[in-house]
Image (cartoon, rainbow, N blue to C red; front, side, top):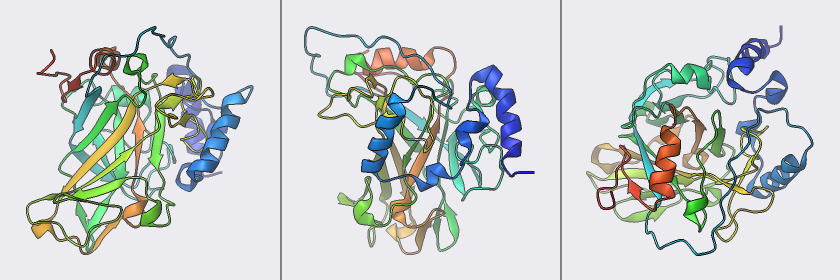
Length: 322
């Protein structure tokens, strides 16, 4: 029996209930961790957006509103999803659905039940470690080790921001949306698209040390323009593109929240020796997102916080702009 058969059986059952990918969608489960560089990914994105049919689940976006006046100045347009790390597994329900132990080790946050068999439907039945307990989405990153011992992040914060100039046009993620940000195949720190900070310094690799008591923090931004159709893609990236001059390109016309992950690690004495991710060096850092917001909560927050030009905390509140 093919090793993908368990996933195919599971996907067939889930498809009817929650519109997750068919077996054809994941014919190559390794694609996401062998993603193409940004330029090739953009070309693949354009091809995907013009295809007649998609092997992936689809959704129709809301009409993108247009405005005759520029957006009012708003310094912040964001939601904070502050979620505690919950568990570690060698699972990845996006890249290796149904195949327990097939991945490198991941550190999970948000939904407390995430494993290789997770679907949006199963996540909605679980609980959340996020401050907003209606955020039952799954967030996961490669596990960090220091000299062979797991280092847990203090918290995993995923910002939902506006990546476009007109923050009033941003729509919530459609139900069942999935995305991988970053690439474990990144070959060097120079090619890493995120940043490392500690003690006021900014780096593209693990720094030689951090001031004692400070946190080593990694940040990485996601593309935020959707093709308006596919909830996933073969490399789990090509259904999205980055804005161009703060505007979504024509082939990716729908602005969704721009995810930016922030992961702080408190290291004893600020020492950074012996650090390594389960996926490799510092530059292999990446993260996965599987949408599972309960009810209309995400839509409410996008309207109030992002469209409303607010900086909402983990409970959806901007104390300076109620």
